[in-house]
Image (cartoon, rainbow, N blue to C red; front, top):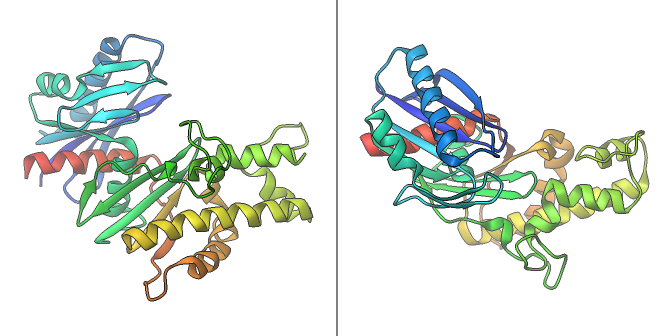
Length: 299
């Protein structure tokens, strides 16, 4: 049995672990990211965490993979820019390789999570899968024949020409309408809140459950936009599985049942409708996917 290091870099915590060749996590460790610190200091914490994971598992890993947010150069192993963490031109994979004495690859965090879901989660065994995360933004990762198809930023495809302004500067992006941030904005603008005045991704669903007609309309509109975006992906890529993660996906069939029906109406005639399901691995997807990306270096 061969073993690989997985490293999932988040804005709050960095998770490390040892994963076997079947995609099973053998050991785990975690350290606070501390985004206000210099990147070289964070690097030392990651190295220490990886060594702790290796010690717990008592194995000798063959390679390592890292999943990082931001703009990255996978070929060189460099985080070009991550504004949330304050990283710039950070050659993190070569530094990790030198410290650990094994090859290390760097992938986008959404791509790594997508690979994790294909190896051990909702899309296990699929030849092609698109994983969409509905969070602060809309993350996307595409896996084809067991390998990451790099460069997918489908959160920034336009679904409403001249529509709402997105954080990227364009108007009408998928992300502007279908992220949790977008849903929270729309919910708040329509005066729907929790009892304490706050708004989160569940607020509109809870209001609809309690008979609020405005909330029901907002959910229907939200699912229409989501279906439009997914249909575009299906028409262009025809994945076997679309996995949806993030807090909104926790609504389960309240979201997925009407979504499948709306997507079915939007998909180009003759195309096979993919399985549209909720992601199952949570944070483990990034850890497993990063490790499996590392596996490609050792095979």
